[in-house]
Amino acid sequence: MGKRIISQRRGRGTHTYKVRRKAFRFKPQYPKNLAGDGTVVKIFDSAAHSSPLAKVTYSEGSFLMHAFKGMFEGQKITFGGEKGGIRNVGTIPLKTKVFNIESRPGDGGKFMKSGGNSAMIHKIVGDDVFVLFPSKKTKKLNKNCRATIGVAAGAGRLDKPIVKAGKQFHIKKSKSKLWPRTSAVKMNAIDHPFGSGRGKNPKSKIAKRNAPPGRRVGLVRPRRTGKRK
Image 1: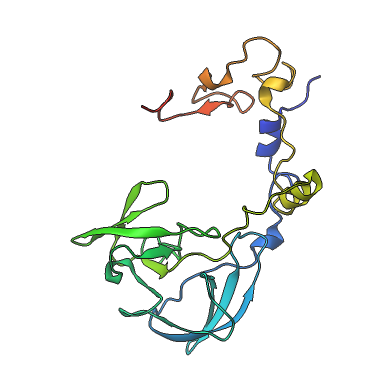
Image 2: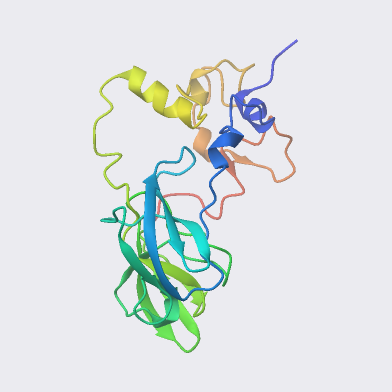
């Protein structure tokens, strides 16, 4: 009797292949009433986020947000209006770097949240604001979507060399990432559809849309294939 291949094993969703639930106990959100001044009470790390989080208190309570580069404890920040650090993208000048951008007004931020990341306000057309991402793609947003001005803190985390495999092991283990990862073409035929020593051209294999989990490997519903010209 054969055993499940890795893609099936990961899809089952055990603790071996997913981040522990405790890591997600902190949920950064923008305040509902975006107007006023706040104070940064504490900056701390979260296992589920690559950028540090900051606890900000203001007149109506407190909230958690992704820290920006240069933030420090005790700092006074303004949000809302046309001069705040957190405000609607429709009021932010062009060419300004922003992060933690909302996809829809009020969703709390969906884009550009990892450490060191930022996007740029590209152009404003009527009620639509176009944001330029690092991938050189632009996204159209509602002018009432909120964002934080600046660059997400935590840049440089990938600059320091790993040096030892043991360090990489602990980095991956903290996020429950599969590591070390064996290449599919290096496996036996019984362990993976790309296995065996024959026909090592896996990139040309496109999984069918209704393929079972054990066959959904390689290019799964690709938008396009081949080298970009």
